[in-house]
Length: 103
Image (cartoon, rainbow, N blue to C red):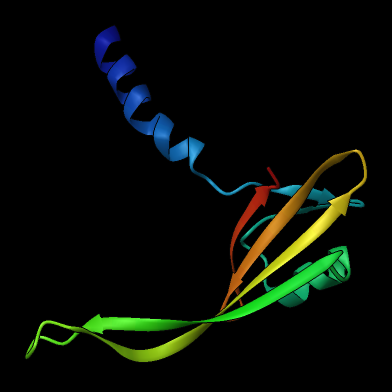
């Protein structure tokens, strides 16, 4: 029985390790489950804000080449937290996709 529990723990561990981070803003805990407006209300404006537009591409089945089918906007917000590592929030098309510690 113990080996099966160990196997289950090993299989689930990578999922837990890849989970988005959360961080504290004042009295709030912020995670990727929030909306951008909730993030701004709880943490205020980020220290830095970068924005870029990326092409969305798909394979054209007639000729096999990649063709542009649209665009997406990716924003990177950085919250400087003093002596703690800065937190980097990635927002894609207006939705929070990830929160990570700055390396």
